[in-house]
Amino acid sequence: MLYKQWQSLKYRRNSLTPWKWRNPDCFTTTVIGLEDAASKEVKNLIRAKAEQDVGRIAFQGSIEDIYILNLKTSAIHKVFIELCKSTFNELNDIKRLVKSLDYTWILDAHQTFVIRSERIGVHNFTSMDVSREAGQAVIDSYNNATGKRLKVNLDEPDVEIYCLV
Image (tube, rainbow, N blue to C red):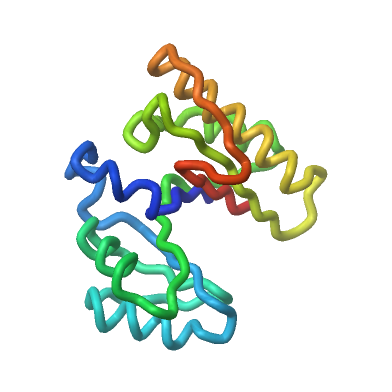
Protein backbone atom coordinates (compact mmCIF):
# COMPACT_ATOMS: atom_id res chain seq x y z
CA MET A 1 0.00 0.00 0.00
CA LEU A 2 1.28 3.41 -0.86
CA TYR A 3 0.21 6.39 1.19
CA LYS A 4 0.76 10.12 1.07
CA GLN A 5 1.14 12.00 4.31
CA TRP A 6 -1.64 14.58 4.44
CA GLN A 7 0.19 17.35 6.28
CA SER A 8 2.37 18.16 3.28
CA LEU A 9 -0.55 17.98 0.88
CA LYS A 10 -2.78 20.43 2.73
CA TYR A 11 -1.02 23.43 1.20
CA ARG A 12 -2.02 22.31 -2.29
CA ARG A 13 -5.74 21.96 -1.61
CA ASN A 14 -6.85 24.28 -4.41
CA SER A 15 -5.04 22.19 -7.01
CA LEU A 16 -6.85 18.95 -6.11
CA THR A 17 -9.45 17.70 -8.53
CA PRO A 18 -12.75 17.18 -6.67
CA TRP A 19 -13.60 13.81 -8.24
CA LYS A 20 -10.46 12.24 -6.79
CA TRP A 21 -11.25 13.39 -3.27
CA ARG A 22 -14.90 12.84 -2.52
CA ASN A 23 -14.18 10.13 0.06
CA PRO A 24 -10.62 8.87 -0.13
CA ASP A 25 -9.45 5.90 1.92
CA CYS A 26 -7.33 7.29 4.72
CA PHE A 27 -5.63 6.29 7.92
CA THR A 28 -4.13 7.99 10.91
CA THR A 29 -1.26 7.01 13.13
CA THR A 30 -1.43 7.08 16.89
CA VAL A 31 0.45 5.81 19.91
CA ILE A 32 0.00 2.08 20.44
CA GLY A 33 -2.56 1.78 23.20
CA LEU A 34 -4.43 4.98 22.25
CA GLU A 35 -6.32 3.46 19.32
CA ASP A 36 -9.63 3.65 21.22
CA ALA A 37 -9.19 7.37 21.92
CA ALA A 38 -8.09 8.09 18.34
CA SER A 39 -11.01 6.09 16.97
CA LYS A 40 -13.44 8.07 19.13
CA GLU A 41 -11.95 11.34 17.86
CA VAL A 42 -12.46 10.22 14.26
CA LYS A 43 -16.04 9.18 14.98
CA ASN A 44 -16.91 12.31 16.98
CA LEU A 45 -15.20 14.92 14.81
CA ILE A 46 -16.08 13.72 11.31
CA ARG A 47 -18.80 11.12 11.92
CA ALA A 48 -16.87 8.46 10.01
CA LYS A 49 -16.69 4.74 10.66
CA ALA A 50 -13.25 4.09 12.14
CA GLU A 51 -11.50 0.72 11.94
CA GLN A 52 -8.75 0.14 14.48
CA ASP A 53 -5.41 -1.51 13.85
CA VAL A 54 -2.24 -1.50 15.93
CA GLY A 55 -1.16 2.15 16.05
CA ARG A 56 -3.51 3.07 13.18
CA ILE A 57 -7.11 4.05 12.49
CA ALA A 58 -8.58 3.56 9.00
CA PHE A 59 -11.52 5.64 7.72
CA GLN A 60 -13.02 7.34 4.68
CA GLY A 61 -13.47 11.08 4.67
CA SER A 62 -13.60 14.24 2.62
CA ILE A 63 -10.84 16.81 2.28
CA GLU A 64 -12.60 18.90 4.94
CA ASP A 65 -12.63 15.87 7.26
CA ILE A 66 -8.89 15.45 6.81
CA TYR A 67 -8.34 19.12 7.66
CA ILE A 68 -10.46 18.77 10.80
CA LEU A 69 -8.57 15.69 12.00
CA ASN A 70 -5.24 17.29 11.21
CA LEU A 71 -6.08 20.36 13.26
CA LYS A 72 -8.37 19.24 16.10
CA THR A 73 -7.24 15.86 17.36
CA SER A 74 -5.01 15.13 20.30
CA ALA A 75 -4.60 11.34 19.99
CA ILE A 76 -3.64 11.33 16.30
CA HIS A 77 -0.13 11.94 14.97
CA LYS A 78 -0.50 12.07 11.19
CA VAL A 79 -3.25 11.67 8.60
CA PHE A 80 -2.54 9.76 5.38
CA ILE A 81 -4.37 9.37 2.07
CA GLU A 82 -4.16 6.00 0.32
CA LEU A 83 -2.76 6.38 -3.19
CA CYS A 84 -3.06 2.74 -4.20
CA LYS A 85 -3.40 -0.78 -2.87
CA SER A 86 -2.13 -3.80 -4.77
CA THR A 87 -0.44 -7.17 -4.52
CA PHE A 88 3.12 -7.97 -5.55
CA ASN A 89 5.48 -10.90 -5.93
CA GLU A 90 8.83 -9.14 -6.08
CA LEU A 91 10.46 -5.75 -5.66
CA ASN A 92 10.18 -4.95 -9.37
CA ASP A 93 6.38 -5.27 -9.09
CA ILE A 94 6.40 -2.53 -6.43
CA LYS A 95 8.63 -0.33 -8.58
CA ARG A 96 6.34 -0.77 -11.62
CA LEU A 97 3.26 0.05 -9.55
CA VAL A 98 4.82 3.16 -8.00
CA LYS A 99 6.06 4.34 -11.39
CA SER A 100 2.57 3.96 -12.89
CA LEU A 101 1.05 6.56 -10.54
CA ASP A 102 0.66 10.28 -11.27
CA TYR A 103 2.45 12.47 -8.72
CA THR A 104 1.91 15.85 -10.40
CA TRP A 105 -1.12 16.59 -8.19
CA ILE A 106 0.94 15.88 -5.06
CA LEU A 107 4.33 17.39 -5.86
CA ASP A 108 5.54 20.62 -7.40
CA ALA A 109 8.91 20.60 -9.11
CA HIS A 110 10.43 22.77 -6.37
CA GLN A 111 9.33 20.45 -3.55
CA THR A 112 11.46 17.72 -2.04
CA PHE A 113 10.15 14.28 -1.10
CA VAL A 114 11.11 11.10 0.67
CA ILE A 115 9.87 7.52 0.60
CA ARG A 116 9.42 5.88 3.99
CA SER A 117 8.91 2.12 3.88
CA GLU A 118 7.63 -0.41 6.34
CA ARG A 119 7.89 -4.09 5.53
CA ILE A 120 6.04 -6.87 7.34
CA GLY A 121 6.68 -10.53 6.64
CA VAL A 122 9.45 -12.43 4.91
CA HIS A 123 10.78 -11.00 1.65
CA ASN A 124 14.04 -11.21 -0.25
CA PHE A 125 14.48 -7.42 0.04
CA THR A 126 14.68 -4.87 2.84
CA SER A 127 12.68 -1.74 3.64
CA MET A 128 15.68 0.27 2.42
CA ASP A 129 15.48 -1.55 -0.93
CA VAL A 130 11.78 -0.64 -1.17
CA SER A 131 12.48 3.01 -0.35
CA ARG A 132 15.29 3.24 -2.89
CA GLU A 133 13.36 1.58 -5.74
CA ALA A 134 10.08 3.38 -5.00
CA GLY A 135 11.90 6.71 -4.73
CA GLN A 136 13.51 6.22 -8.14
CA ALA A 137 10.11 5.22 -9.55
CA VAL A 138 8.54 8.47 -8.25
CA ILE A 139 11.39 10.48 -9.79
CA ASP A 140 11.00 8.67 -13.11
CA SER A 141 7.21 9.03 -13.16
CA TYR A 142 7.36 12.75 -12.39
CA ASN A 143 10.15 13.30 -14.92
CA ASN A 144 8.15 11.49 -17.62
CA ALA A 145 5.08 13.62 -16.87
CA THR A 146 6.75 17.03 -16.50
CA GLY A 147 10.29 16.82 -17.84
CA LYS A 148 11.56 17.90 -14.42
CA ARG A 149 13.55 15.89 -11.89
CA LEU A 150 12.42 15.87 -8.28
CA LYS A 151 14.88 16.20 -5.42
CA VAL A 152 15.01 13.87 -2.43
CA ASN A 153 15.45 15.18 1.12
CA LEU A 154 15.75 12.41 3.69
CA ASP A 155 15.72 14.68 6.74
CA GLU A 156 13.14 17.43 6.16
CA PRO A 157 11.14 16.69 3.00
CA ASP A 158 8.19 18.77 1.88
CA VAL A 159 6.26 15.57 1.06
CA GLU A 160 6.46 12.14 2.66
CA ILE A 161 5.23 9.11 0.77
CA TYR A 162 4.85 5.89 2.72
CA CYS A 163 5.11 2.46 1.17
CA LEU A 164 3.70 -0.23 3.45
CA VAL A 165 4.66 -3.70 2.23
